[in-house]
Length: 280
Image 1 (tube, helix red, strand yellow):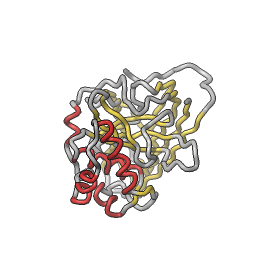
Image 2 (cartoon, helix red, strand yellow):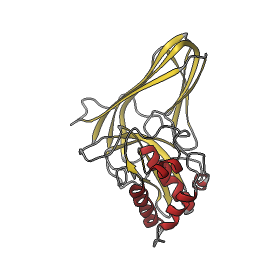
Image 3 (cartoon, helix red, strand yellow):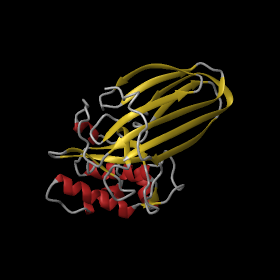
């Protein structure tokens, strides 16, 4: 599948801010199943700083905006060619040992209800089967309902409410997988919806679980599937905050508001060859 992505995040401040520093994890992963044909990142008034690939294999680059400014827009445009790998993450170079992803965070810490949900899933023949069963259990326990949770909602809170969005599904799956001694992590990216029944947001999130012999495999409880050619992977972390595509800090006391617009569309063919390949 050939996808064109436009992603704009606009920050507005009620008072001018200075010396805004941002860390951007907004470049598609280098792995089998997706090939970046061109990719551009622009920050209004921004100065691009150094970039590096972290231990998780994600490309991170720094930007600064000296200001003063009351508005900053981060705009991403690019084209990615994808194919279905049945959710298996192959060809992705990283240094962090999978066991590091057994560590809980505030967003993924299991309360009594999450522990009960993890325990309710029957033992399986292997870790892959268990991972599928855990993902299905989360899909049943948490309905996809936009607007009822926020960025700081925890897995425990989403389960208690019985509804949430893709972030909540990912956090809950991570929590129950870790309770069953399966390393699990949060993944940020994009999703192209191909049917009206697909529950999604174009800026999407899912979980990866590390299973024996296969390595990292993606699971999307919000859509009851493993990532396929509709998905574009950006980066990963212990939870949504750790994997956030944009992190930043600014000097000033202005209150911040945020607007995000994402469009992922399928195109028949790319009219030009790659001009800005992802850094390796």
